[in-house]
Image (cartoon, rainbow, N blue to C red; front, side):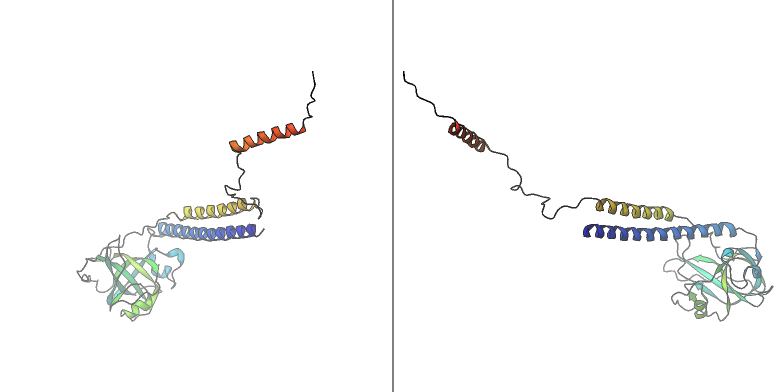
Length: 276
């Protein structure tokens, strides 16, 4: 009985772990699918005024949605590090735009103007020239990121309000940033525009079903082991050769024959002697 209980307990624990792993893989699949659907729906949509999308927070359904911004650049650029593009080292140029029109006039929006390739041991590339005066932008909006590790002066590793403040941006920025699609009708001068995000659904769904199959197999294996009959404690499941029945040898067979003949002779009646 104890063996059966322990067997089923182990099977249940293994199955529970597999179920949890499968649920996590399923959540990753759902997250990737939702992100892919969002990019597909919003990335190529027609631009709308930025105040229509930022109120001032960015709704989850509006991520990557193009927005039109009219304003002017203020403060010095900030470099975004540790963000490779297509697997190659790159440095991104961040700017702060003071919005000049609409309900958000006077607010400050962080924008990613584009990126430059970063050659090994060549130092940072020179910053690009920014338009003077009022500029018309089309940006794709994304929420600000969580704060990261501290970088050198004028640089950040995350597009976060606290990190930008450490880098010298003394502004109360909006809780979203824009990826520049065009600047006065063209991409930012001397910068490469951000590539379209490639969102792969991956194989998390397949992994989820595999984990759940392992869970079912664990429970089935436990049931099969429990249904096996118990071996009595006194019984030896692996008898030694000495304990196995020995086949009679030729001498044993000969002794048995002699014993049988002697027994037959002893039981036979004595023969009577007749004269004549």
